[in-house]
Each structure stands twice: as C-alpha cells, then as structure tokens.
Image 1: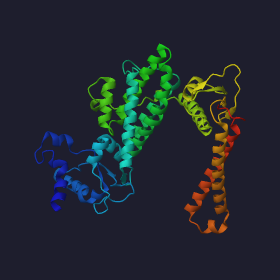
Image 2: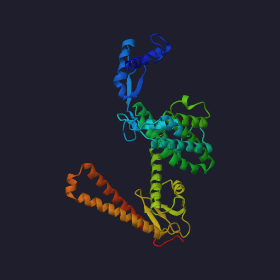
Image 3: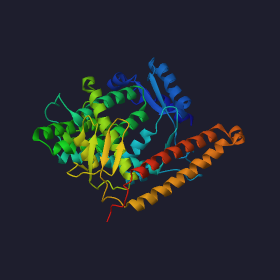
Image 4: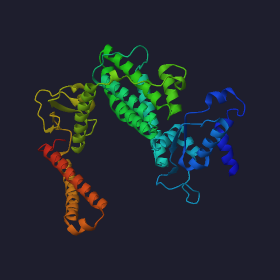
Length: 420
C-alpha cells in the first residue's frame, strides 16, 4: 500500500523523464487540471501536490475536479458480496463503448456519486441510434458543409441555427465550470428533442419544395450535424468520428476545431415562431389522441388565428385543407388564441370512444374523491409527514386536471357515431 501511494505521488513528473530535464517534463509540468474520484483526495492527490513541491518546486496542477464513486442504480456501493457489480467490457460488447461512456458522463454531477444500470446504457445506445439515423437522413438528402451558411434564413432553418448557436455557447460555459453531466444532458435533449424530433421532420417540407429552399435546407442540415457531432465527440467519440467523416469527407473529427458560437445567429423571433408551431402541434396531437384518432389518419381542418407556420402545422399533423361543404365536428381553442376546427366524421367510433372516456373519467373522479377525503381529514394532515401530504395534494391536482381534460374531450365528440 505504501509503495502504491509513493509511486502515485511521483506520477506527475516521473512519467515525463524526471529527474532528467526532458522536453516532455518542460512542456507538461505543471499540468492544468486533475480529474479524479474524491476517495483518493488524501491518499494520492495530496501526495502528488507535496512531492511536486518537494521535487519540482511547483504544484503539478492548479485545478482538481472531484467526481463521485460509481454505484449501482440504487446508489449502493458495488461489491461482490452484494452481487451488484458489473463488467463494463460485457456492456461495451453488447451496447458499444460510446453508450457506456455517455451513461457515465451523463451521471457525473458535481458532489454526487455516479449511479449506473444496464437500462441506462441501453438508453444511451438508443440515443446513439437516433443520432445515427438522423445523420443518415441528412446524408441521403444531400446535406453539405460546402460553402458559407446563408445569412438570411427563415422559418425552421433560422430556428435550428439559432438553437444550435445558443446550445454551443451553453455547452462551452458548462465545460468551463466542469459541469460535464449538465453539458451531456443538454446535448442529449437538443439532439433528440429539437434536431431529430422537430427539425428533421420540418426539413422534409422544404426539401420537397423549390430547388432554392431545398438547397438552403441541405446546407443547414450539414451545418447542424457538423457542429452537433463535434459537440458530442468528447462523450461519443467512435460514433461521431464515423458520421462526421462521412458528412465532411475530412480526415477525422479528432483534429477538427471546436465549434465557436456566433451570437448574431441567435434569433428570438425565429425561436418564438417555431415555439408557436410546436404548441399547436403538441396540443392537437394530444387532442387527437384523446379522441382516439390515429396519428396516421388525415383529417380536414380549418386553422383560425395562426399568425404563421400553417404549412408546417398541416404537414406535421396531417391536416387537409377544408373543402367545399366542410362541416367541423370538433373544435379546439388554444391558449395562444388559435382555434383548430376538425371534421372527425369517419375517423372514430363515437360510441366506443365515449365509453372509453367515461371509464377514464370515473377513474379520475375516484382518485380525486379519495385524495380530497384524505386532505379533508384534519387529523391526517396534522400527523402525516409533510412529504406525504404534499404527495396527496399533487395527486389531487393531477386528478382534477385529468377530469377537466376528459370532460373537454367528451364535449368535443361528434353527436353521433361516424365510423361505418
């Protein structure tokens, strides 16, 4: 044990050729940052500092980033006696080294241990698949990094470029503060929620439009995936290098420059415009789901009060233009002042849907009544832990929200069955 601590204390300079005055020693000592687990702060880190001062008259590093211990998904210390240890090589064979690395980085919040489970590694693998498929979509549709990115962009193109630059700046700031988990989580949600789930779908509209619009979107697709893959490279190096070289036809993302955010590209107007589209699409999708209308079914609709983005809303929701004799059977008014009138005739079995909603309403009312009774019992409220009381209040609020939603869905049903 003493020999281990002693050799570790010498590590920062003995590996560089000390006691000889080598070029490596001159260049790399002192270093800048040490990243290590908190458990060896006294055993090894302090000794490296002391031996560095003794042998080199200079500390080996100025900043020490301490991460937590790797534990199982329940926060328990891994041990053979508990049977909760894992072999990372098995996970890497099953899900890839990138998935294991990504899961570890995403859990490395400052001041906390790092929980890990096979389910989370599977989720990271699924994220890698999502990025892979989205990049392939871009490549198959001619995404390019050639030429300057147009300064004047509109609609979804302007939105995603704005978000890309905002995320780049935020990731930089998080890395500067050594908040690796937050940086990884930000990239996860940006890549999955914004790029893959929204922009890739919105890009299909302009790719099918005029040649000029399609060319602009191809260049924006190239820019988005070029920067995104470089931002993801520290945590998914193998995946990103393969995709980036295919996209750019360059040597390797390893030697590519780190992305630099352009504040002039951030547009509050563009982000607000797409946020309005997302709000309408999300609410109408929820409404259609409540009504039992499958996402694949096309529905005639009239959009009232929408200031922009009608083509995008119709594309994403599969809404047809209202034809002659359009007779809406359902209407949805959103908080933004937009009204969506839908002709659901021929799309749902009204009787079956009314029965389903009635069953859901009864369950929500039962949940509401049970929690109301609990909270109306003064003795229970006085004696129960605050966390338990808060849990019942949250369940009551959720039940009341469900009741309001279901009642609105029942009221919006057509008066008679429409499906043959």
